[in-house]
Picture 1 (cartoon, one colour):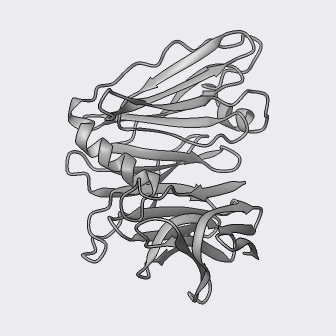
Picture 2: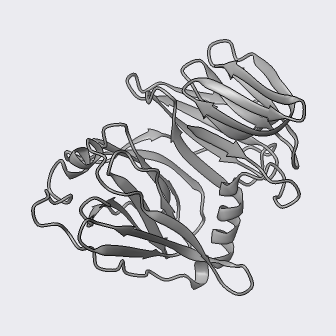
Picture 3: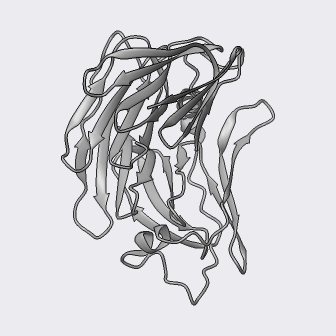
Length: 304
């Protein structure tokens, strides 16, 4: 189930968490340093996730307990980085990440994390079921996030340049070998949207389309990569806020609101037509392709 919720009065305009995180990263990057991951304790009878096909094997099972991911803050509330803590059948493990870092949602037992300092970046696979931690890639520039596809046979990585922090697009890494391929070009500048504070990667409900959701101070742009064909579409109509979810037929977002309640907008992927599904949503959640919208008048459910 996918759920999107804002809390009124505590977030900046449009208020996606990625915007808050991006701002903190910009402020704190200069003082951040690489922090080595704590030792990972592998189970000797399990296949090493660093060997060929390790991510695919991890993605195909669901044996590990979910890792706990927590933000680290100083006494003033400034963001210092993240911690990833988990438990294998035999030993605990812990990973400490710097300010410029991300942790993906797991695919089976495969989870990706990124870390970057001073233009040096790494993308890792961690398998909570075995405690194995494997370096997958060292992309150029500053990696902002990475996600596996549904089988964990490919990794999609979003980066910005260093030190200018211009968008560098999204590259696909085949985990069976070969060179990285740029599949989503750098985001063009647009005075209407202004500076991009954060970019979110994710998948449609059927796993066939990668969304690249980039937000400025007030509004967002979303690019959609159909993996099978390589075709790319852009949805950049004005008034488009934080993404809620993507189905095979619709992109669903909040409006460009400064707080809650907020409108919910569905964009038809074929015609581009926009439909307002609710004017005063307090929260939303997807179960499959059915969207539930909580409003003051009750819950509205809409097939998307």
